[in-house]
Image 1 (cartoon, helix red, strand yellow):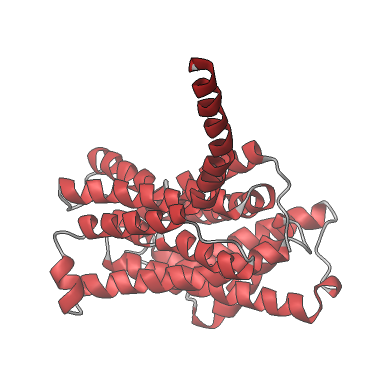
Image 2: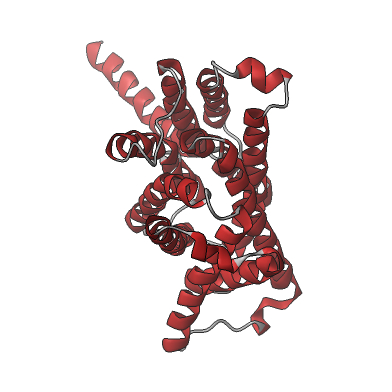
Length: 328
């Protein structure tokens, strides 16, 4: 099993970096998707990021060796590649049907699914704090979808299809996250991401249309490049964060991502109204988004909160006993 290094501050900064980069990513992708299809956009993101990592590792003579993987490592690698490829494509298909804020809020289910899966894979306990966090998160989703809850539950509209597609993207991402964490016992985070990126790009090559890049406007071209670099830095920071910090705390930090998206959309809509549309939600939905984030963070940090409370309980009881003796 992979054991975190314990450098929690470094892990926190890396997780925050991932959260910010993931938060602004759907705004850029939404613009690029006006011209390119989701598979081609994904192919470019993975191919560019993987090629840059390959050049870096080759120059530093740290290319990964495949022999130590063995059969188990090979299956883990295949699972990670399949999970990340499906996640990228499904996420973009969902983004085509939804707003950036809604997409990012729904994909917030992914870290929670990773946490719940870790309870079984890494044999962690499910605490009362986590159960409360899940209930709070469900309440938040109910508030966020207050305007379209009937539509989601009774009909298969474009909006409902988009939500279900993003939920599917969150589900397959869980397999990637679990497999990647175990691969860190064999390779470092840069080696893991290089292999996964290039393998994913190779898998998508038969369905990609690279010449679509010629149809992009200059702005869309720069945004595509920014998406590629975002992929490199954000997932690299995520992989490295898992190496230095517990998965539960990384997941809690990533809970901030939807709030970054909503703030970014609001700012971008005021600065570039011709390219970015504001979120069409009411104040109840915004409050629901905050509740979802709080529930997600509480779910991730539940075990730590309960452990801290139990550790303090004996000392609190002792203080009360001493106080009673003193008053006597």
